[in-house]
Amino acid sequence: MGICRDISITQPKKEARLGGNRAALFIYAMEGLENMAFIANAISLVTYFYDYMNFSLTRSATTLTNFMGTAFILTLLGGFISDTYLSRFKTCVLFACIELVGYGLLTIQAHLPQLRPFPCKDIAPDHKDQCQDPTTSQVAFLFSGLYLVALGTSGVKAALPALGADQFDTKDPKEASQLSSFFNWFFFSLTIGAIFGVTFVVWISTNQGWDWSLGVCTVSVIAAVVFLCMGNSLYRNNVPNGSPLLRLLQVLVASIRNRKLPIPQNAAELHEVDDKEAGLQNEILQRTEQFRAAVVSSNPGPWSLCTVTQVEETKILIRMLPIILSTYKKVEEVIQVKEGDFKEKIEMPHPKDATTVIHPSIALSFNEPSDLQ
Picture 1: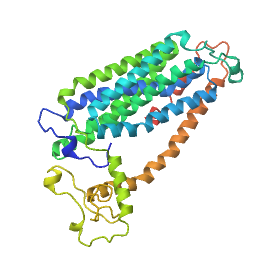
Picture 2 (picture 1 turned 180 degrees about the vertical axis):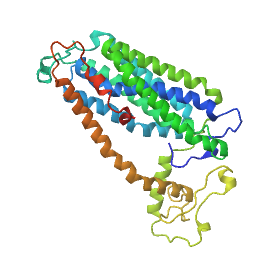
Picture 3 (picture 1 turned 30 degrees about the vertical axis):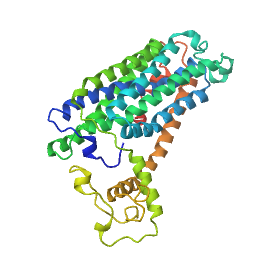
Picture 4 (picture 1 turned 135 degrees about the vertical axis):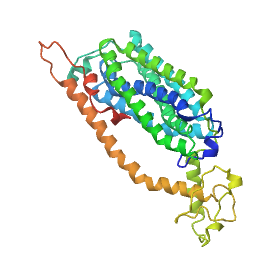
């Protein structure tokens, strides 16, 4: 997770045998397998809450959206850990193991009847209050597994794309041209995993049972970790060197502290590390107007004096904020549409002589899976 990729930090190993498309293959495999499990549950868990945990329709939808929101917001934590304390490879392995524990708990609960209330399936929402409510311990068990999955997938989503990008040296023209292809294939593997999730895994949950479905998700995450570890000898691993979020905060604080200082006419008077100090491969951004965080002051601390490159990184992010914030409305609309679709399919009457009834979770899977990615 970063605004500007520091090549000297993220790619310290330059041997020809490391990185490249060979290393990326294992990353594609992990992304496809992990996303298959995540998207399958993002599509259909609402039916598990409604039919097997006896949650009301509103509570089922709210529980799912809270789970999804937590999974995505915690990517900030995963990115911070991978940049500051662990390498991206170790972050992926650690958080995937956490996700694995979460799926294991959910599988156990779906398999053992004593860990959930007596199922109250195919009951109209108006009569849902007649069903047995889950106990506090049953709900706690559910949420423990659910939010371990959210925490685990957040770390994988934060670190795995960056780990893949680290395998391509942007200073090498050949590898630089392969970097854009990497993200194309990364999204392709993500989409293939989502397609299998919303078809194969959802079909299993509907026809074979939720214990089988969640068991498949557990096995899928195990396979994802195995594939990632198989490529360990090929990876270019980053050395943690501080979070970009911390660098951004330092720029904002320093710009406020230095707001009254005059900006030098000569850009050479602004603070920047030279090539020897930064490393020959460290990417130095050119100065633009705005902000005074790089103006040399009497206080040389990191919260009062930042480099020009740090300031430019912050400007790039600030200029992107309108685009980032504009996606909020789309996400809100997608959530509302999916909740409405589920309610409509639950309440839809089925003909008594119908030989085939499409379960709501399968019907929902025909919605565009990329909305949830």
